[in-house]
Length: 193
Image (cartoon, rainbow, N blue to C red; front, side):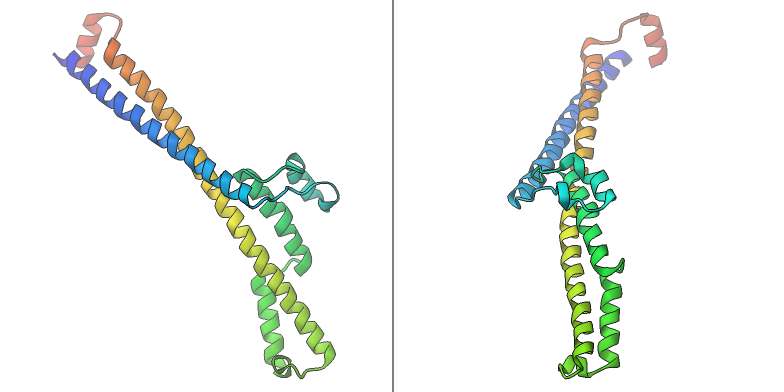
């Protein structure tokens, strides 16, 4: 009696795990396809050759050189080792917030800057800071979009692996439930008691 209950439970859990695994694998595949389609539509070519000006760029981007960006790992590498490196070079290692604070302090210290009546030297310095600030803003916006693509790619990858594991578990439990246990019936009956 108890053996048949366990076999029925194994069948049910096995089927549920298999169905869940299929659904989760589909979700992971959908996430990869969606991210890939969105990245492909942007027609971004991964940098190569002379565009890789720093060693860190060469270390992380050479493997993708000249390819069209279609995957989360490519988006991450482009964001972190190309866009970010250029942003830091343009700003002397300062963030958008730091440059913005400097520009605001400069304008506050010299109200003629915002009126456009400051000296040519002061205006040039302020315009340089606001130019860098705009560059950093655009870079941060691009990076956030690419890093979001990478995050969803990673979620898709986790879902794919979880789905595959659930399908394997589901099949294993289903086989045990449908085929049954092999071995000494007394041991199985004793274990069930």
